[in-house]
Length: 393
Image (cartoon, rainbow, N blue to C red; front, side, top):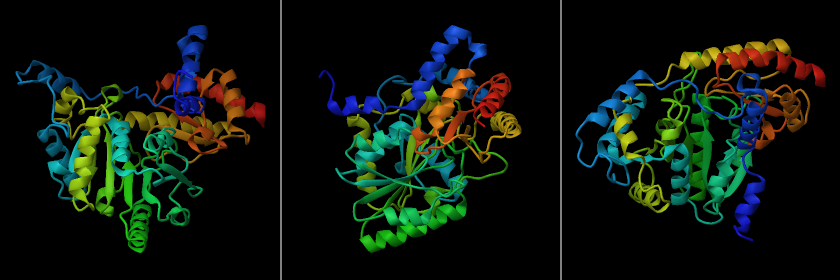
């Protein structure tokens, strides 16, 4: 066998999202892009803020020594300080630059975090539904995933989490706003989780880490606020990305931030820095670090995504679909009108609509729609959605 058995096995269960995206590419060639309604991939279609373009041009023109040379493994001190100050302003904390490590997006951040934390057999609790790559990230470092159910409204289920915690538990990984549901965990939900982790950590005489994956932190609607994870719990770690808030997914820029009082702080941050190097990232992209340092108060126009959400939700509700209206991110996790979500996605495919089965996210009986697409794609897809639900009813 030319590749490892482990990777061979992983390929057979790799991301349904990418499979649907590839299906969509083929269909667009066959039918024309305007006749295919591709909701498979969360690739932001909103342009970055004008300030990003301005600062990118400014930095490209500036005379900066070693502008394209190696950066410190942790990232430029001025960038880390700007991020720490933004977090402090938002949540009333006292982070310094030393509490921030720059990363290659949130995916890079999570891999660095798990590489730093996990010994073989350590368990990470993951509420369902979840982003499809999480199990692979954890397995990369021989960790064990412990899936737990959420409540009917996709909020965290404390009883399920408590039941999953044992002497092998190292961390719980949450994602808010959530992909695929668009759920934002409430402040009470987070406070209850922090109290549970404090209590169980004391019982087990160990640090239980709360890892929060937050690439959609500022993509929220209707006045909803994302609770400050770092403020709520001492042993909290945030993985952040500018992919969505600045529409820069291809630039692979983000950061890891920790509560200043986190247990084993010095060892942990040194581990993040070393793992950034030895995983092959070396450091986050240097040019993008310089740009985002100047953009801490910038973000895309979230009202554009809210309009898309409302167009889609209103249209699907008229057709008879059941769902919880997303509070953030740009995904709708709708109930499949038949129990077999994979089969229903195939029905949608016949209408040239590409969605992703909920089974791939640990949410069977649902399907995910990524509505970060042109308004015309949403509007023109609605007759097909209506026809599909009629066919299976």
